[in-house]
Image 1 (cartoon, rainbow, N blue to C red):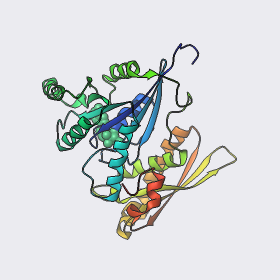
Image 2: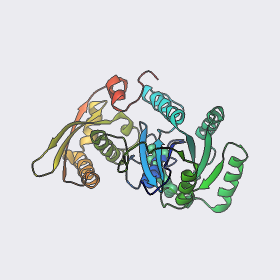
Image 3: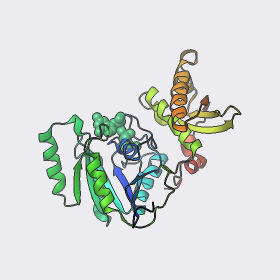
Image 4: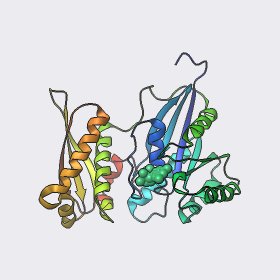
Length: 301
Ligand code: GDP
Ligand code: MG
């Protein structure tokens, strides 16, 4: 750190409709998985910090839950958390999905952004999926809003365009001390991260509305003498019928989920991990203040 005359630090909130690729971008910038990703909307439930160091600058990304029209209590809390992230940040990076363009979700966000007095950059993501002509037309329309200092076209998935964006973020960062230790890439405790990884596997295995009826909690964390760790987790569902689906025929589904969670956690923690999964019915976990506390969400949002 001493090789730099002056360190820089920047807090950047990443905002956007569900599924535009916010978490994918944060993971790519950080160079490790700090935020779970799935093809389903509203995978990210809470504010996740991803931290990276680029030359003299420490960049702290706030990956927010997608901003959308809230219905349930959990949805309201997630929206409040996303805008809270904006308030905390030095600058805002709005992400738009090039395949969806300016949809209803996006219009709501643009309107609210106009009220915030923040430097706002735009990243049009998933450019690997659309043709150039369509992309330029979209960029032109967004440029006309006058809201953005810069517009970048990227693919968070392939990495295309991401280094230009990163270079600009480093330029924008103000002088200041680094806020986190050099080797820290997230602020998420291991127990919560472990629960999130299992939740991602659940989201990938379950269909339609069922993922949203589930949540995962790490209940036990047992260090073994051989250097391995046994992580016990409970998957909460809302109804007995859902429990049967999560278990699968002869327990086959939960076995698949546990196995793929175990593999990724072993990789993430760099040590052998055993995962024990249990399924429990808790009818109203979505209205339980304790769940909200775990995620750092405001129950009364
Ligand atoms: P979030 O809800 O905004 O955090 O979105 P995610 O990061 O969870 O991504 C949603 C889905 O879009 C996932 O299936 C990602 O793999 C996919 N995705 C993200 N970025 C890109 C991209 O640049 N190109 C393509 N083709 N898919 C992407
Ligand atoms: Mg996300």
